[in-house]
Amino acid sequence: MTELKNDRSYIKTLLKIAIPMMVQNGISNFVNLLDNLMIGSIGTNAISGVGIANQLMFVFYLVIFGATAGVGIFTAQYKGKGDTEGIRYSFRFKLVFNAILSAICTLFFVLYSRHLINLFLLGEADNPADAAEALEIGVKYIHIILISLIPVGFTQAYGGTLRDLGNTKVPMFASVAAIFVNLTGNWLLIHGHFGLPAMGAEGAAIATVVSRFVELAILIIYTGKHPDLFPFIKGAFKHFHVPGRLVGRFILRALPLMANETFWSLGMTTINQCYSYRSFDAVAATQIESTIWNLMGVAFIAMGEAVGIMMGHILGSGELEDAKKKAGTMRRFTVLCGLVFGLLLAGISFVFPLLYNTTDEIRSLATVFILIAAANMPFCAYTHASYFIIRSGGNALITVLFDSVFTWVIVVPLAAYMSYFTGISIILMVAIIRATEIIKCLIAFAFVRSGIWVRNIVNK
Image 1 (cartoon, rainbow, N blue to C red):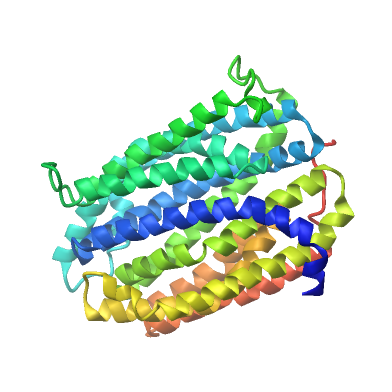
Image 2: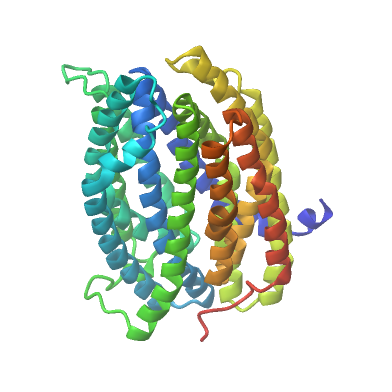
């Protein structure tokens, strides 16, 4: 605690960046919770179908996040250097690159979403009617959501750039406005109010699409009307020229991070598919657990991202030794957040599943999953902060080894083996998979302590 007290000014700056992201993510996940409850009121098959569809969208969101974050490493360090033209170039690249990726992903999901959703339902041999209904609900939901993919790409380019510059309030306000549009749309369209048709899960999808366009519009208008606050926007659209040497460097940073986020999210999706093969009830129970986990995890997630932004600013300014000193302090502060919210998560584990219109068996399973997740939260906080520290120096290879390679070499094979070749219970299976985070903590400790991530990449 002495070291934390000695770094109060730094922590104050860190919280100034992190708190708006906590608020944004907290409100977003709270509304997602309400969405989940509204959809859950339709029945268990709706929870499963929409939950599976959102697992696939989770992969897309992380593809875009990875692409934006890869270039965002430059944006943060350009900020530390005071290079507005460099920030402008990185912003242009994000817009074009994200638009291309979003279009490709939209086409892919149009062609293959039915097959992908069905992979999660292969374990439901006892009641094929339930599986068939969940499949149709999921397909209809995802086909509507696809309309929002390109706007999401542009939103990430705008919001990601502002966050990399240390301005997290504007993305927060845009997100909060979009969230309330989404919530209102859900209330109007899921069960039908004011004469509107009751559209179920499709109504929830329409509300989500509308909210994505609202969020993008707010970011475009606010940024464009405040060039004094965001100088990079001046002349940003006169042309889309980015120097060839920078395009190459952006791609070299963006592709590995994008690949890492893609393979990590695919790994998480594959693990959930392994759970579903062992137990169809686990699909709905996992959806319930992940909803409350996302809400309780906003503190350490936002802290981790803020740590990465601050580290980028420090590295960009050339204060390499200072970055090393701050890394340990910030990780401990992030773990403290994870511990506090993990205790809160455990405290509500027996109550939260009761809010869902589902079976007692699924509620009981969800309670155990939530308790396992709560015990794991401090470890996740540690690895999350470590990931952003490692990423801030732009060392793509270490990032990939630490995240996606670990997932595919250790966690996915372990989940597949337990699911397909053993009779282990689904509860013990989930507990073992979650416990692998401890191994990742040891790897994170070694990587950060080595200092191999401490690099300035904008003065080259």
